[in-house]
Length: 199
Image (tube, rainbow, N blue to C red; front, side):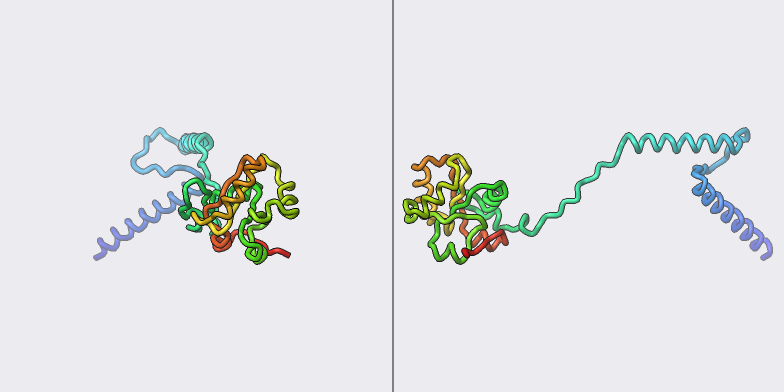
């Protein structure tokens, strides 16, 4: 029994000494070296070796910096499935129209006047085939440079004849960069994009 207690005590002392050595190594930035050491090695050469290892590690860290990824957070608008809803061939998706709107393109609403007054894309002008040759229509056209990007919209889809008619008249008047939004105002509003009402 006494022999077991002695062995247990010796093991406890050895374990405690090992733990103290690890703690001291961490505090002094000296690597823990397990196993037998050469008898000629003194503590100062161990410290020099440790310093060399630390310097090598620092050089490697400085030469191989960790690339950080920018912290980009997608807004709910960016992930809205309406932005990429299918549209008729040759027409703009909602995402493409939004990009042009952000880039400062001119927007023309070709719906009925009461629909326009109740709500339209922010900054959009009101111009239809019916108002095209009126003083109001002519005034709107003078605010748009003929080479500017112009996006025309109405209710969207293949039935968007109002947009097609307005586009044809603008083409005849010398406008060169004309697009039709493949979805209508309702989809724009449903996606939470900027709208306004007439004063």
